[in-house]
Image (tube, rainbow, N blue to C red; front, side, top):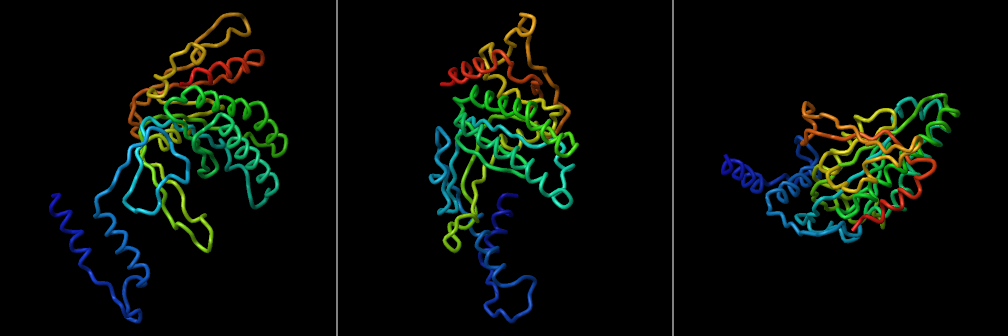
Amino acid sequence: MLEEFMSLFDDVKNVSFREDSTVEGKMPLSIEKIIEKELNYFSQKVSITHRKQIPDTPQIPIENPTTWLKIPDIICCFVDMEGSTKLSAGSHDETTAQAYRLFTETAIRIFHDFKAAYIDIKGDGVFSLFNRGQSYSALAATISFKTFVDDHFTPKVKKLTDQDIGGHFGIDQKTVLVRKFGLKSYQSRTDRQNEVWAGKPVNMAAKLASLSTANTLWVSERFFSNLKDERAIYSCGCPHGEKIELWKKEDVSNDSRFDFDTAYSLGSNWCEKHGKSFCSSLIELDS
């Protein structure tokens, strides 16, 4: 089977596309040349460079089409709006713009403040990437944004639009491959390129977020297993002085979208009295 597969690409490489653009064909010559070029790259051996941490964005390769970086145990925090389809850019353009700005810009700035190594926008959501030694920072950042959604975003948008718009939140962790795709430059611009993170974390975090309702955070068992300190697991004791476990074990074994059987959900936000000190102490636990 493998020999037949490779012979198919040998045939492709030997194809000569038409040089006469006036000849009729299935697709324009320029498109056929793009396809021919990319099929040729597909048949070439890929070069993988191992990195211990997420590099600065300019260090992510784009020039050599067969070069990738491989980074272990990357943590992805994914957040997006729950109920965003209730907002209309057509009939309620100003309020929709206000809501998107408040959610997206706040998410980006909060994750940046918690020193996320990479931040990007995906649809009406934001995903941030943390290195494997930043488990508690990733958790604290997501809880901080979740608290903002509950305390500020949802009530303000409700008052403005009379719609209940909340948040979805998910976290996963696993190895990724990364490189840039697109044009290195176009008319002195670089906005036709972007980083692609191939692997589980971004997709799994987004799928976990899709399960969350009522501003609940869902995390994979492989991320949860890194939370060893009780401050990440138990409450501070408010309001009655009794510490309780905050996480609920969730069975996702029947959901074929996931490559793990167990997730954990968290409904609580930062405590009014101890939230600030809990957040600071969690960050200090990161290696």
